[in-house]
Image (tube, rainbow, N blue to C red; front, top):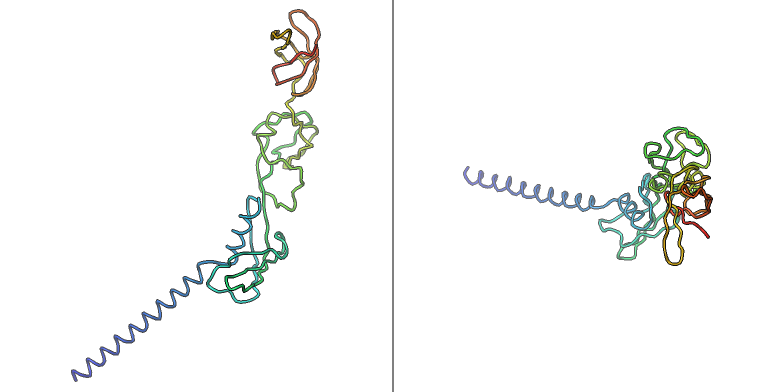
Length: 231
């Protein structure tokens, strides 16, 4: 009876060892299989090779059986946007085709409200949102710092993407603005208080009047507060 009990215990012990070993092998296989996915590989590839801010990969279809090994490289066969086709190339030179829907998004500037022509854009007038790269006009503005303080060339509606040709890209200086007049004469710089007689933009010519002498002069707006007088 004692021998039978010992034999039974050994059998139970052996079965447990086999079950534990099988579980470890299965777990290792599952972990290896879970170390990478085609979606993650494609997303990383597109992010590393293209200048887009946000990537979306979906509806992945693999034409073949993927191994536990990651591909050594990825090659674009069609795309990379839309219904794209990629080759996953492995260390043994095996090539597997992978299809996926790939979308890319970028941030664009939108208007919060309707604005009239000549409205000067302030921070609260705009917001950033993402847009599909394929739907973006080429001249969309994406950096708010470049348009703050600039005026609109035409009226726009609310929630409208702001394009370069909608904005005066130079700083607008209104008529009647108090400015400093700079005059270079024989190596000396003479300064005087002045006032613009017309609206203009930084970098362009404008007429101004010397407040002390009441004399009209012409010069270039070198910034929004300064006119370099032309002789």
